[in-house]
Amino acid sequence: MNIKILFSMMGLFFSFIISAYADSGIQQQLQGFNLNGYNNTGQKTWQVNGDKADISDDKIKITNVDANFYGKEKANLTSKTGTIDKISGQVHLQDDVVITSERGTKMTTDSLDWNRNKDLITTNDRVKFTDEQGVVTGKGMTVHPNLKQGSINENVKAVMKTSSHSKKPLDPQKVTITCDGPMQMDQLNFHATFSVNVIASEE
Image (cartoon, rainbow, N blue to C red; front, side, top):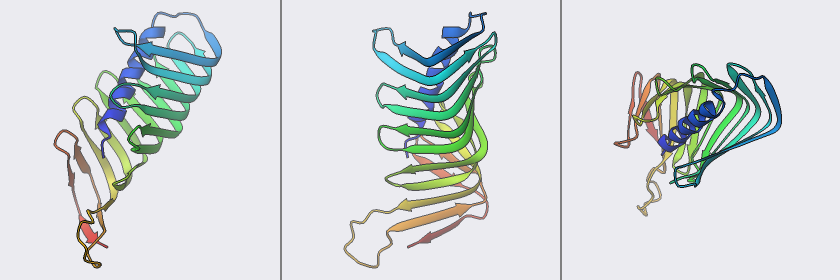
């Protein structure tokens, strides 16, 4: 599962949002909020839409966040609400948070926090990753986007499809791995490590 691009683009996007409104000292309310970001060559790198944005001295609160990221791989992020702290750079997404990549990898959770200074994305809620290879679920998550490393904290369950090159009808087609956690993810080496009471079964 290639989840590193989802979080790398999300971090870049919120950095631009904070910069765009960092010097605004006027409280504003924008209906039909829309903001675009571009790179040095003039190509659009992200776009965020919202039904409403309340902009104050220290925070930007967006209702019905719908953001698109463009680049090597496109992705979409949606949530019911988003709050950006312009001073600390921290971002909180709340309710029905969904990140979907162009390749089809999808992450869902109830809330998500991004700490720009620590390059850290966290949640204490349940998370679910799905793609054509399978489904990974668990409770709590910590991801370092630029380091391409992360972990699902506890109650991890991974159900993955196996290669079906064999013609033998009884060969397993699915592997299920559970553990108490954490499950460490190393996206650079395409490696995952399951910890504590690990159980694997084939079907």
